[in-house]
Amino acid sequence: MKKTATLTTDVQRLWEKYNYEILDTSKEEEFDDIVKLASQICKVPISLISLLETGRQWHNAETGEDMTENVKESSFCACTLMQEEDIFEIDDASKDARFANSPLVIDAPNIRFYAGVPLVSKNGFKLGTLCVLNSEPQHLTDEQSFGLKVLAKQVIKLLDLRLTNKELKVQELKMKQQSEMQNRIISIIAHDVRSPMASLKQIIDFTKNDILSEEESKELMLMAETHLDGTLDLLSDLLEWGRMQVTKTIGETRPVNLFKMIQERFCQAYASATIKNNELINLVDRELVLNTDSNALQFIIRNLLGNAIKFTENGSISIYAQREDDKVLISVSDTGIGMDDSVKKNLLTGDGKLTTLGTKKEKGSCLGLLFTKDFIDMLGGKLTIKSNKTKGTTFYIELKA
Image 1 (spheres, rainbow, N blue to C red):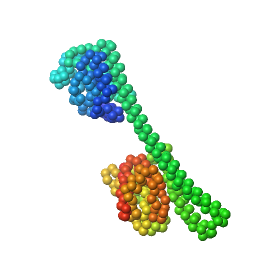
Image 2 (tube, rainbow, N blue to C red):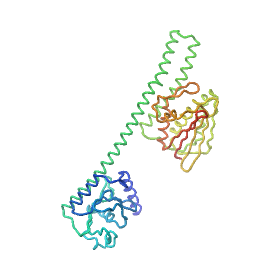
Image 3 (cartoon, helix red, strand yellow):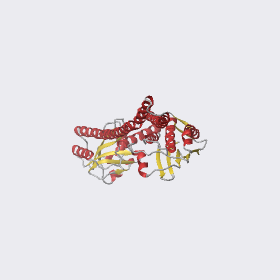
Image 4 (cartoon, helix red, strand yellow):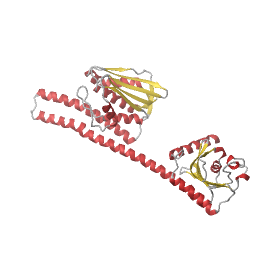
């Protein structure tokens, strides 16, 4: 049990160092200044900020010797971290049984004196040490011990500041992305939701005032119905995406039979596919099951299927999936009009203003695909697109199994 606990602590400590991003970094002036000051206070030629990783020791800053790495097993710093004291000091290592045969004592730099203070993170993990060394025996005064402890705390404060800055940058990036998405949504709502509503109101006004003939009114109502169908789909997408943004998480993960889900989506899309004389083909293995959020996956399939039908007429839309190790690869392919590279790029990164009309002049906003990508990202997956201007389009989705 003790070994397991130690292993867990080592892993947590290593993760803490990775989180601080301090291993294998280039020299930084702030840390270099601290080791120089430590050398001056303690009147020693060598001072190090030493970080311990599995199997090795990394010096984040040093003065007096080029000792960027040395073997952990012969490290004075490893012993420092094993002590309960807030400072570990050896007056003469050549007379200490633990270090007398160490290469660092026998050979250059012929260490005799060592004093180290553990670098303890705010989570209580010992990341390494701030230490001073000399090739001559020595003992720190009380003032020097105090100064070394204060400098060790400054190292941790610098690391915490680094972590805070890192988190702030991440938050700024998220805020920028959210702001960009909100602007896209406002722009699309202003056009793709308001316009059909305004048109419908105008048709109703014309009809009430007997401005249109019965035939004209019927024709315009059919056009309005088509626009409203698209608007309802858009509103559904907005509501589902909004739920995801509020919760910041996917729903409950459970086993989903992909073949059955595709069949259900095909049934719902049957009418719109038939109007365009499109064949829907389910090539998924009947026994293929993956653990995922069912609602998120249905959103993804519904949008990609609807998109394929929009741009395909007198053709086919097929969905295929296969398991590869711990992943499931899904493809949604159509034999439609395809797209060029600029349109393909805009689908996933654009502002929603560039749209392409479907085969029956259906309007679109690109927002559904932007939301689809968001859902795939939330599921830890990846979306790629391949398209040929004359041979159709395939969307490839990679998800965790």
